[in-house]
Length: 209
Image: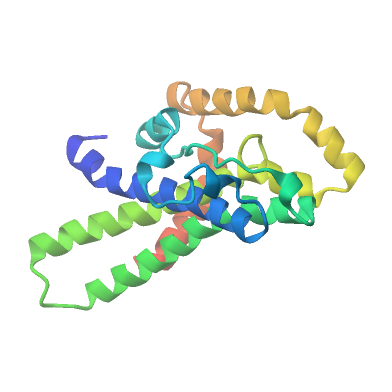
């Protein structure tokens, strides 16, 4: 990634990670768990949500993660259901953000009075925002712990199957790390093959390009 693209990507990465973690905390708080709020994580301040390794993965691998928001499922009235809602809130916020950036992108394209140099900057920022938010949304829906998809899968499975599913969680971070390394250094991007097509589809859909 060259310097210009990096400068444009940083605001998009910070926004995507921040909104993702904020809505995890917001949903948990609405469902009866104030843990994130009490620990100062119910905030739109990016510094509260940035995980250095996750942010670096975003820069170099185009998918990553933020600092997980603390959740206490024992505060929920229906732990399995509410934990799934909280887990889904993060990716959903990124998907909605990508859609809204796409709407703004298409509106700006129809405004002829914007100077060319400014429009190019805005277009690049918006496209970067769309890509980063879609990447975070779909990457986190992969059912490997500690990604949100694993919590959603666990809540959807029948209880006995969910307990068996939880037994493989200890291996999931290593599987995930191996897939990232394989994609970056082995030239075999399995994660890219999984989340690349939906990212490209919605990027074209939201931008009209």
